[in-house]
Length: 478
Image (cartoon, rainbow, N blue to C red):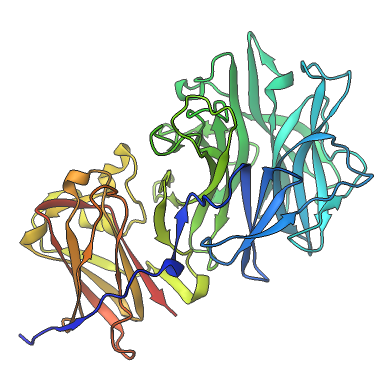
């Protein structure tokens, strides 16, 4: 057997990953991210001081402030409570849906505010967005907030929203509920009557006393199934959490998932995880859930509701279930696939193990799921580290940039370190895991390989006794 050639593992490169939450942005809520295809750039819009602060980014790693995206004009109907902006590229321009409020004696709310949904337009995703009409897009005679649009593949458009609890009672409880209604294709108004899509009924949705919520809706169609995501409980509490429901038609009926909630803070490192929306990687192969979390997690109620944006992978499982790789707390993950010429390699990758298996299946290491939650432990592979190796084989030689090796939440089963043998010829220095942060990945970077070497086989050797892994993520350069 030939002697292996040692290559140095490249130093940590902050530019090839991003961290969530993005704590440089705070005092916001309801983040929404648009991927603007012509520019290959992301735009984030939030509830915040002013009228919808906006940032841009190429890769989730750094965000550049662009100022307020919306401009108040003589057409603006709102005088307060400018909340939850969402922006869509549609028919050659950009449209923003949002909610705002004004006082009216017709309101049954204690403060006499009536929340309605507005529509604004801009030629640039950074704005300035100005109202299309001199009246709300949708004002059904009660308060509505949290507008979101679903563009179906048959060309029809749907408005999802929350009927706000300030003017909505069910018995002795104030209730926020999720509704949907079809919009005209030119976004000039609604078609037909609104349909109730989700109301809080499950125990996990009823943790806020006499006021209960299903709010912040968004929807996506995947493999013929409509997925409606929503948030329950009080937004400034640690119980704020995301669930989902599925249907075979855009306006339902929707059935809530048995595994709800799919995104909930632990009250220790994360809390108040909710009001989500969805975005994708530049190459379209990855889905991400965008949401906010409270910056202070040690209070049952956060009086300032200081929040910061988070971005985590959303996984559509083969059986149709949704899983979130999160919620994350200062969690390092690769850039979205396609950013800066770096791509997640998944197609055709096979994984095998010669180690003594202690639990799970080795195939779980390439299913995309990082087992944050106890119910996801079936997505882990446990083995005796010193009894063999785990081998990745690529369908064709690749220019391997890095391998991200994730453990599980169980620090007692975290490997100590990992090394890689490349093509039976090269061996890397060891990359260590972090005992006090077991979900922080050990990252092997391959910049030390000769420039002309392409990788087809990667043999991983671990130290640490009986261990468990959650995921292996291969990043290649194209």
